[in-house]
Image (cartoon, rainbow, N blue to C red; front, side, top):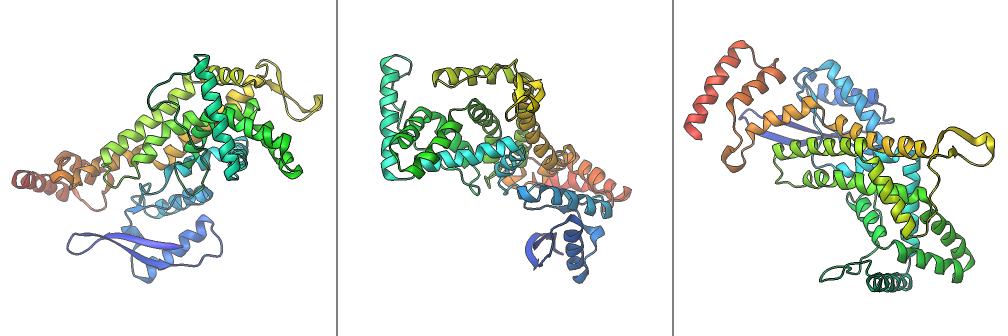
Length: 385
């Protein structure tokens, strides 16, 4: 475990430095907390002086880091957790969605389908030829627009667990190349070696299933909504106010999708299935798992797709965003933006800084300090701005 400290030196400058590398035998919240506390104590640093905490946010460590935050807050209630803007948020959001088992299986199969379809130069050529022929047919039937830059030859994108935008790119490329991918997989089933035929058949069956297509469209919507925020947080030039505005708008759009997006999504999925000869289940039929009456569940197919997948995935995204960007943290960062030196302190606001000191740092500012701070800031504003 690497420990990095950010602190204000005696001259008032913010410093950040690598502090220690600690071997941990287990990654429970309490173990991590004790190890960090030991390092701080060894350097005679008081935990009571802690004013912030942040972790890399790896998806497989979400619960441990959540517990670690709480343990430090018990000792020091003003050690606010701030999400690291440099962290790949979209990977964390995808990780949250993958906690829904059926979505985890979807991304696993998406990776398999893409890898099979583009496994060799020959298959890539077949993919491109099938796409070109399909576009020509759609244009001839006047079901596709033409024009400069329209229907350019796309590339099937692989999913990469360390590339934050690859999941959305892979989904969008597969939607564009869906028909062509089906053609290539069918050719593998018909003409490939026996081992390839079995693998191709499994991939084709999954690709042509309503469940796969439904999740494909759902994740396109969800990742499309969160993409702008994830992209913005990667920019070093991003200002805090704009970032917090994007957090709020992303939450609102996800909530809007949750409340009014079901019927629109279902209609889009069913239309796509009709265009690609994919069987559409009866949404009012009982939902079955496995075979036989003993596997029958007490709810409908519609309930399964709407509640067990649609709502569950969206709620996982909202929960992840709410965990990383709690209301108090959003306010803390918004008030702190008054200290941003960019553009000659464009966002400087004396009242916001007084509120910041009073509300979030009561241990560091007594009543007299707060009184004097207000006038010091007014003098600074008059002299420098």
